[in-house]
Image (cartoon, rainbow, N blue to C red; front, side, top):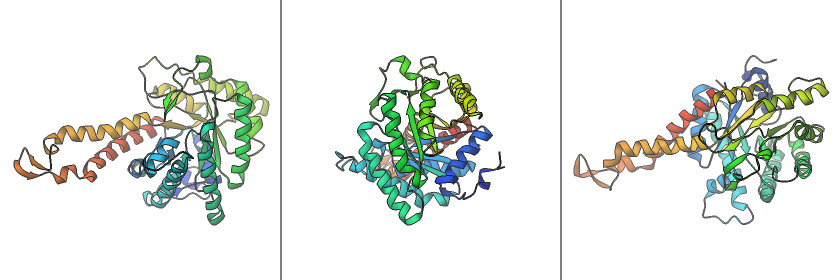
Amino acid sequence: AEYSTFWDIAGMKPGVITGDTAWNVLRFAKEKGFAIPAFNCTTSSVCNSVLEAGAKIGRPVMIQFSEGGSAFFCGKALPNKQKEASILGACAGAHYVRNVSPAYGVPIFVHSDHCAKKLLPWFDGMLEADKCYFQDNKEPLFSSHMLDLSEEPHDENISICAEYFKKMAPMNLILEMEIGITGGVEDGVDNSGVAKDKLYSTPEDTEMVWNALSPISEKFTIAAAFGNVHGVYKPGNVILQPDLLDSFQKHLGAKLSVTKPFFFVFHGGSGSEKSDIDKAVSFGVVKMNVDTDTQWAYWEGLLKFYRVKMGYLQGQIGNPEGPDKPNKSNYDPRKWVRESEVAMANRVIEGCKDLSNV
């Protein structure tokens, strides 16, 4: 690798990174054999948990917003028939992270997660925000966006991705696309009944993507399917085949005379075996999504707090110390939300360690 540390990369800074700087972090990760975890965030508190973890270990991390999570970020009371709340929430989240992340002292990617065909108005709105931000700041609002058209025929999937990538490339945005389907349920999208063969991509699939996107820009990643499933399941219920990623790399690499040409993304990372994660990273995975495990960690922080403080949380007045004793110091949201943040930050650090991002 040409850099001894990611801080040596041109343009590196604490806070949100984009363009060549962001892409070179992914290149550095692939060369050094680590990947960067991406955590789905739904509130500023969840964002803070990720930022806190990144700061504690001094490593880059990714904050990503799904369409549903974006709508939640700005408030579920807002109308969203035209995806206006999802656009507003994603942009508000990105601006929030841009404003506070420099104080945490580490580089941050801001990413938008799965965008299916029916959600393209959301994607269009975010791209418009990127354009406006780019005009004023010479960089896009987000670091990267994901198009998930894996439910569509491959030709349509790839052609729509290319169409959007042409709009993104002038702003130096990174595109993540998916070929093959991630099973399970995520953000209201249910792929739990998908045919088994759809859960595995082929060398021909990934080569098609390369041929269509590489002439536009080098800045694209592929969420190739190798048996991935969203959610956490009993061991043995999900059959991951990370060796497929190696076959994709070798298939195209032989034609291009290049070692590991692809930058892969690992979807459905929660609950995965460490051995599968290690293999996937060695075969060119530079990003892994984690959501289910951090959702549980955030909840468990509150659960443990409640179990310890139960006697102080049954009313505003009256606790084990006396019937007239106030409980405000325990039900103040800053108290119990903080417990969730600490628990999630610890799980984020664990996610970084799983990917050798330490």
